[in-house]
Image 1 (cartoon, rainbow, N blue to C red):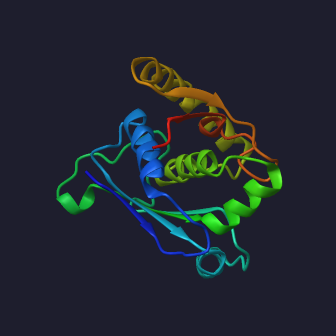
Image 2: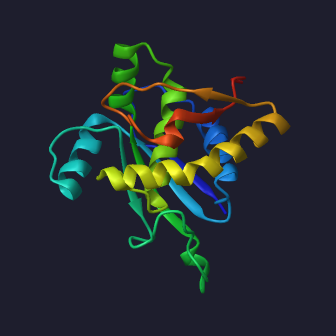
Length: 187
């Protein structure tokens, strides 16, 4: 199915093609290519408004995920799909202005960070949470398999696994964010 990538902001120059390529690799590794996925890039004002509306936190943030299947259990894909409209994982909003400032402050590559944050958002669409220590542990166990698939894919294509260390405010324990796939050749 399709990946819809929209850039609804004009604050940060954004090349969608590299981000699309990286997210498609993540979708392949996670075996979710048959599902539609929306990835929407927004500025601080819009992400703050969405964060306030749905989470009652009146601050900008890096990523917000809105799953199509709200009761999906972690490590399970939607079962028997009866209608093509059900082949939808949901939407991810990326606060690209927020992320750009964070990258500038911490000396991180912007597109690598977008890739990791997108992967993190996809995890939430797939039912993963990290609000408790038990949920962190479940996430860690589930992504051992992801790591093996990622390493295999990278050895069979021209991509590399890169261990990324994040600041304490983003994804401290998220296993999928510690090993991320991305193509190093920007075109």
